[in-house]
Image (cartoon, rainbow, N blue to C red; front, side, top):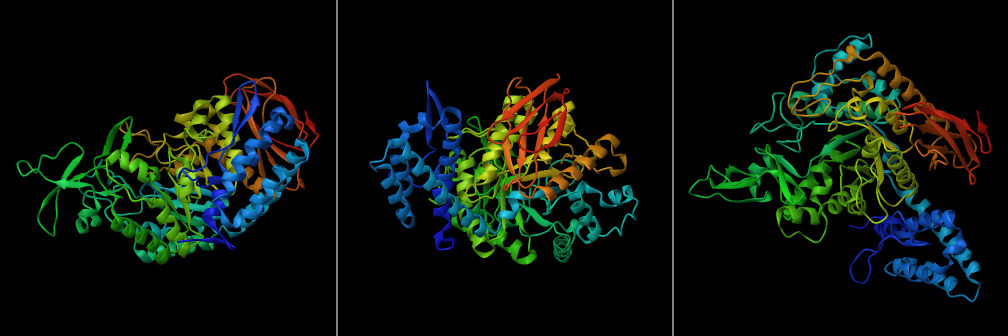
Length: 618
């Protein structure tokens, strides 16, 4: 299934720009690595033209272009290999080679090459951006709702309104409730855990894990009917909000509709006749209703440090089965067809990549990635549908598959590096946070690969105040003022936190918890109210600004970034923070932009400044 950007195949354009094309040996071309002299190397952030130009610009700033002239023969080989598999780009390839092999002096050839590549890449980037119907997700501010705990009536009462009718969640969630979320500056809602939950081996006393799903195609009846959900989506759209829901591809509940109808779609083996009710570790006994035969079915699980850990209330599906792939694609498309949802947060997406799945479960996989098949099929029919990967590894593979956004939580070992946003904030290490900002700068700039979804909390993490302590406000400040997409977990704005000893989550799955909106911590509520207002004001004044990492001179203990208007019609905005427990002096200047500032940040302090190029604020 081929999707086009104008007359150009989308996947080929993405490969040429940022993912890397395929070399004759079948491997994908890697990011170019620049030699800066004295043994120093600087890897481009991605393969392809975007990564190459971005890496060259930063390398030239570090050492000057004269030091990079030695790379001209390397550029000829790299760019020739990059362009070679793309038939429609051969004219550009010939132009590059003619420049590189012309009799002009090296400096002139270098300048012509970079000028041509820059113009060619800019044109292709514009075409990509214009054709990308799901690009809205790259700027989406997503408000996550856990319906079972949300307590809509209590939230209304805390705002001085009538509590409501007591109808099911989706029927009761009205236009004003959605407008309240919109008024905070959000433009999407992710309603988490809306499926029927399995009964067999159900965990905890709160109704079970929302990720042990009995029917991927149905709504939990406790939350309402199909018409109730359809009405909720319609009201959200009228309020200017996109609606995102989960897709949980890796597993089902142990009593799921899919397992009952298609046990062949699951990892299983015939039960031992001598003891069918005593399955091996990681298995459970299932009786096939069609044949009466007893099977041992794998629990859903994941590989970690050479071992497999299991979610013991789930059953593991088998992505080596083409029939399962077709069924899962059909189910995902049906949610768009029936309810007009706008996007999917794909649970533990990286587990079902071929290499990971094969390694964990020792099965032989089809050549194509399931995530490729899924995203291509859905976007061919519904191009504006966004896909968000919960991914803690395999950034490049998820990006190649076509995900619009990938969780930015942890560091990943990949060519060009990746510093995860959440873990960097959690570390309170200025250098780590600085590296995460620099990674965010590139991911916001590039068009062909996945963007990052930033957050300082979600339903899986401990509450921000437990995770970050006195650094909570600074971490929130850096995240919510950053351009691009971010995720906010509903209830964090009041500092709600009810952990269970078995789970560090602010709202555990294992015990009944209801958000108490009326017990909001006044200082926390005031902080977020002001921060939401500031973030909205910035978005109104600086529409889609350019993120620029600030690099400290002097004391390296502070971190920050600038928001620059693309055409410099507005002053630059500086967002600064101090993740340390000591006061730090901020002293920096950027010759390229003319930005400079000299001042002081208290322990865990933060500041928002507006400055024109050349200004030095007191």
